[in-house]
Length: 383
Image 1 (cartoon, rainbow, N blue to C red):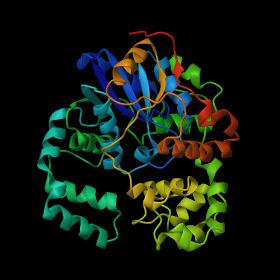
Image 2 (cartoon, rainbow, N blue to C red):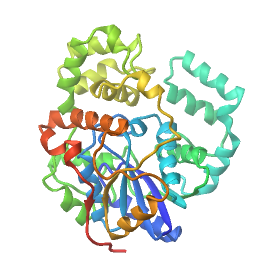
Image 3 (cartoon, one colour):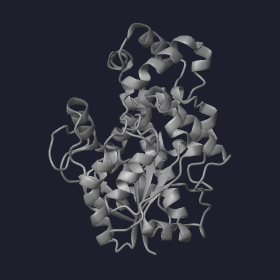
Image 4 (tube, one colour):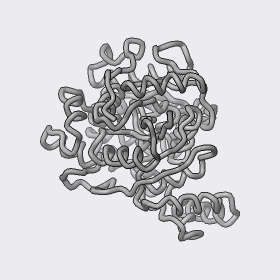
């Protein structure tokens, strides 16, 4: 079977995702579409809108996604290059022939050219990044500005182009395909048929209505528990105010300069929004701070992340699939180990701890315990 992979978050699965998967299936002539989806927390350090099993079911229910595999926590809550490397590693390990992604650009050629230039390996790039950091820029902003100064091949100031570039850098044996993003941009909060996931979540917070989703996906999400940082801030605040500074600096993303700022912010901020306003600076962007807070919430130490090889993995884990997805799993088992039930793999033990950190503030620990959950089989394929 010819597989096309999509690295995703589906937070939640919406009409724009439906369009991308449909075009990817047609243009890559795929027999099935495999989504490699972030689990409990997102790349930008946000709690998932709903749990990973529900989001995976919603994607398969759309009829355009045949199989959802989990992108492990160690890969998913990461800066763009590591997120991309982890996802591409899985896509290539399962034998996918193509990797499709949405982009603001919509043309694969600039991504391939930009990746071939290898600007990040040049002394000029390193010098520009160092200058940016010395001027108080965050590492992500300094890197983006350095890249922009050295090439006009690709605009990396937009989030999907940035991920696409790192997919191209990471790809070894897989062909790349992109579809132009349509409808709302990532940060656009406008309401319509094709909305950004950010807009869908914001609209739900205001109206408690799900808009911009395929009907079948929306039906799966009806009655789900939806999360936001407001659920987690009391737990984060407690952790910050009860943990010695020397211990805080052992969590990934928290250095000796940031730790006292986090504690001071927690002391004086009663809401998460106030807390973020207090601690955010040019050096510490909202995304980097959110990731650090998720690492704190999940007890993820720097030494853990330092030990991760982002181009290696020895298993994949299905979350949801249909008939075609079940056939694909038989094929994938010939390439890499497929873990369908919980077992004492070190990364699955970590997933269990991460899921507990996600579920307890929602009062859903008993329903979301890892060893009680299994991949969902939809029973049919519509394509």
